[in-house]
Length: 264
Image 1 (cartoon, helix red, strand yellow):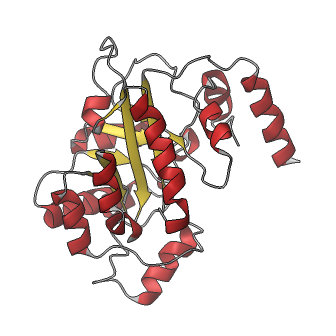
Image 2 (spheres, rainbow, N blue to C red; image 1 turned 60 degrees about the vertical axis):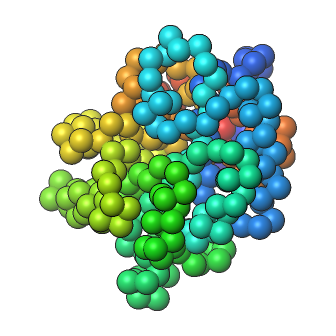
């Protein structure tokens, strides 16, 4: 029933889809396993060929009056495949942002901690997270590193006294690894219901310059608050044309009303 309703909602939005892409397109991915590399190349190349340039979060969030075409490519969680894909990013000539969970680094975490982490995010693929030196190599290659909390728990379900353990500690650990400040944040699970106004204020006070959501079909929203970056996930298990269509949907009213995705 839930899947059927999701399809109906998406189809209703498709009827009013935009003809062209927004000038600002924000994508997010998770793991990048070898069988998806070709699809990833195709996704990014689509926008590069249209004149989009990849940017970091602060560049993406700049004044909306800027008429340039901006592409924000980001990844969430913690996967060794990011390190293995460095040559692919270099070949495409793109800059990516990696929002990293810090609890499962394989050179310090136990196997049980790593497995518990992947269980929590419901990931059943290759359960090999990054090492700290691999994350440093990603940063040294010119990519941006952001905070995604320490353990990837739902922040909205945690008491305030736990925020320090999840957010501050993640930020500090990442800064120690990469050797410079980390000022961008993506909150776990990414929907409105997973992030509260007090959490928003907490992150502002901590010094984050941007917060990335996983709320799709928001790319046509007015650029009211540059603090937030609304991203749409690219689904490798879905057809290329469907993913492109998702980027032309405008589901602002649905997302605001229900806090859920109109894409499904």
